[in-house]
Amino acid sequence: MNDVFDYDAELIRYNERLRAAAHVTTHDRVLDIGCGAGQTTREAARSASSGSAMGVDVSASMVDRARRLSEKEGLRNVTFERADAQTHPFAPEHFTVGISRFGTMFFTDPAAAFTNIGSALRPGARLVQLVWQAAAQQEWVGAIRHTLAGEGRMPAGLTGGAFSLADPTVATGVLTTAGFTAVEITDVREPIYYGPDAASARDALVGLGMVEYLVADLDAAVSARAHDRLLALLDAHDTGEGVWFDSRVWLITARRP
Ligand SMILES: C[S@@+](CC[C@H](N)C(=O)[O-])C[C@H]1O[C@@H](n2cnc3c(N)ncnc32)[C@H](O)[C@@H]1O
Image (cartoon, rainbow, N blue to C red; front, side, top):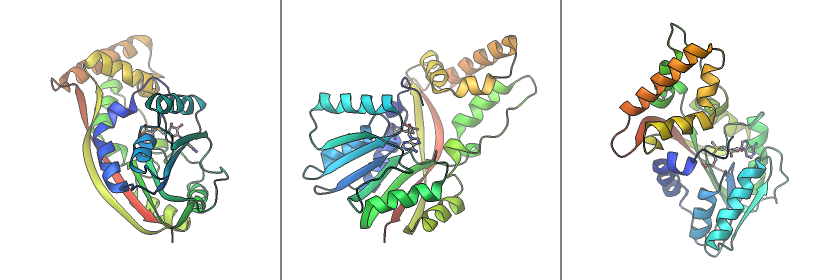
């Protein structure tokens, strides 16, 4: 995960959906899983003005950035830990709400990870997450893959990683195995933002690693043409208010019994 890409800008529409669903109130103690630079953690801390919010992320640089941004805002009820949420020894039954904005899809053993997260939640606590639906549902994946593939080739399908909880049966199974109940999965569709213009959007995608991954085994001339096609595609998606792509996610809520 890189430090350059601006997830806060990309996910601005989804952020509102997560915030509404999490419905953090004054006395909540919130755990933000895979918090990245901590925008959602800080928002939770502001809502839990007599409670607290803790963000955890495996990336030291993300946690540093989250701490710096929170200090700058003068927030006193927010903390960040560099931790692997799969195994971190959280205080048992401490948190009243767990949230995650695309931070729970990268676990190597999801059932064990969610069991660990569940043990950190108080009985009755809610877990509210956003995860990507399948790659085939994402205009941003399809368009970018198609544009970069060219030359009669298509890269292999994208399934794991960011899309590991894309199948609702799998997500429900994992959460149920981990002891959660009342699993509800809602289809949410919002555009995602890649930058004010095509060139910035291309730089963002290169920073995200997506472009390099797709052109990794193409020769230099093909790769250059692919980048040109990408730029043209991004330009076509420039609405005049920036470059936007359609996307679909699952809003998953569950309860710790
Ligand atoms: C797509 S980013 C989302 C970051 C943040 N939630 C946001 O919306 O801006 C996924 C984040 O999950 C973190 N992550 C991945 N696996 C993790 C794990 N096992 N424990 C904690 N964080 C993890 C990554 O380091 C990364 O910052």
